[in-house]
Structure formats: C-alpha cells, structure tokens
Image (cartoon, rainbow, N blue to C red):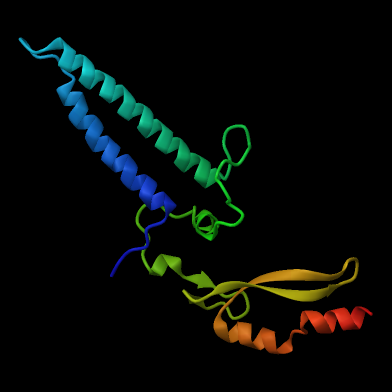
Length: 162
C-alpha cells in the first residue's frame, strides 16, 4: 500500500535529508591536524548553506500551516485553486507524520458516518435577505443523492425568481 505524499510530507522528508547532510558536513568541517584548511573552509561554507536551506524549509512549513507569512500575506501560488494545499490545511491538527488511510476519513454532515468518499458539495438555498445563497456541505454519496433529489436546479431557481 502506498502512502499519500502531500506537501507537508515532502517538506518533512527534505528536512530529514538536510539534517543528515548537516550532520555529515559538520563532521567534515572540523579541522584535523595536518589537514587542508581550504577543504575545511569549503565544508564550513557548505554547512552554512545547508543550515540556511533547512531554516528556509522550516519557514515554508510554518507558512503552509498558518496559510500566510509573517507579514500576513499569502505566498503560496494559487492556493485558492490548489485543492491539495487546502486539503492539508484542514488536517493541520494532526501530528506531522505520514498520513494513513484511516486519518483521511471525513465526517458526513448529514448522517455522521466517517468515510473516505465524503466530498464537499454546494447547494442553493433560499435566504430571506439575499434571495438564493450557496450552502456548502461535506456529504457521503448516499446523503448527496438524497439531497440532490430534493434540490431544485439552478434553472428552476432562475425561473422562480422571474
């Protein structure tokens, strides 16, 4: 069974790889008696770059979990259109470890069952102040079919307004 690899999982793997590289580089940047100082200097520069890259990656994790940077501006490209980013943000309460299939279960808002095939749906409902407004619900296929059978279509709503 393959595990789901999301944006946070990839960032976590990057941090783990960087930690290993930092440990190796730190050991090689120690000056040894009779060793070449230019080599030690180069390893020290590499160590500095790796630590900077690790800090940048950790900042990306922070921005992703909060949805914005320190200034309050979002810097994730196309986050409104990126379903994976929004999906992961909904699960930010979980520990940062690889997800399992059980952790991906969602709760149906009508029947309360927890399943993987629950999805978000939009339905039109009558509003006293604004006419028709959109109601967004997380539904399983059975509850979705029940709601779909009782919901008027957009064309019916437009005809009713005229």
